Amino acid sequence: MWGIVFVRKVDVVNSTSVRLAFALTAVFLTAYLTAGFFALQRVNEELSARVVHGAELIVVGFEEHYRAGGEEALIAAVSMRASSIDSEDEVVWLGTLDGSRVAGSPISGTVNMKSGDIEGVSFASEADDRYRVLVRPIGNFRLIVALSYEEADDIQEVVLAAFAWATAATIIFAVFFAALLARRGQRRIDAIISTLKAVSIGDMKARAPISGSGDDLDRLSGGINEALKQLEETVGGIQQVSTDIAHDLRTPVNRLGILLERARTSTPISGDSNLLEQLDEAVAAVGDITKTFDALMRIAQIEAGARKKSFEKVSLTDRLNILAETYLPVAEENGHTLCLVGGKDAEAWVYGDREFLTQLFANLIENAIRHCPSGSSIRLTVGVENGCAYALVADDGPGIPPDEHDKVLRRFYRLDKARHTLGTGLGLALVKAVALLHDATLTIDDNDPGLTVRLDFPRYNGQVGDK
Picture (cartoon, rainbow, N blue to C red):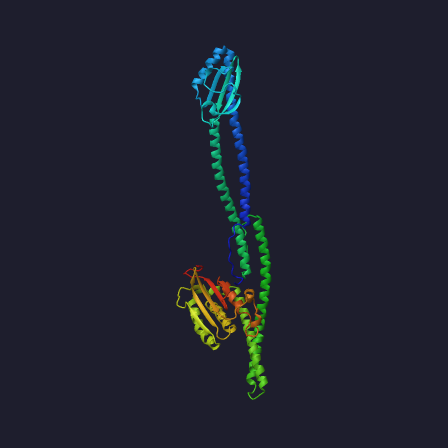
């Protein structure tokens, strides 16, 4: 496949922007979850402390009743509180030191009960309930106050559920925001890559976009643009030199050809046969030089885009039909078969320069005729596929080695096995220039055997730029 064909595969795993965005998201979520864990621990400790403090206040209240009114006041206060509370939330018990109940709620195991946290089964409640128990001697009595953790546990569950929902929302937002940042960064990186690819296929005026934010990608784009500007000037200078040479030498070479023609026509037919033969060869050589200069100047004209003003609606079908009829006798004369496939497809319309498109396909057909041995088949195909108008030239000749596919697009580059044949070495360079002028994708593949050259053009649907 020629170097001007690029297939980009989006690799999210290997995207630096995506990796960085999600790495930052992971760090943020780790910090968030760590802070949330300690916050929940703190809330749990605070709620437990409140239950302990509540139990302490109840005990202190009973001690004040005892100090104020003695045992009777204590018994009355315990009885009144026991009758007014929910035994599942709070338990008060007053009894003798040997475990006999005097007032309050009936509970078991009072003799060995100690202050601390115990399970609710001791108070005939649900097995998973927890109580904060305080055991205090008051006078000749033993006071037990048990306060349930149920309310604190409920609050903790609500807080935990809220934290879980907040965490889920945070993760969604963080992932979305990270993907947004990664996409934005990736778009700018893709724009830089597209610029470099455009330059690599010959668009020396392409430049990386600059957002104006002054960030690192803007600085990178600025540096790339400076390098591309220098490259454009260097390549432009080289191309200008070859164009100037072709332009300046074309006139004296033409004059030389005219002089040789005059010498040839003024030499008597009965004269020296060797001289006549040498003059014929000289005239032919001058003609080849003139063709080379013409090709160079035409390539320069194409690369400058000067002919875009003459773009019009062109049918690839018509172009290939005309060329097939024109080159059929030439192909048959060289022992080849030439056929057109899809010649009745009238939908293969493009927007371009009729003359240059004709020259493009003529060069490809001439290459196939020139380099294929006698008995080879040459197939022209035209049609519409995937929204593009395409045309291809295929043969079953010797083909081109894969490692030479890019090189044959260079000016004056010729394969070693083709150096004994006539040609300027500019035919495929002109094909590449015309393809770039028309925003066409140019692909060369092995035909096994032979070679296939395919061009995919933006399809013309009545408006410039339609594809």
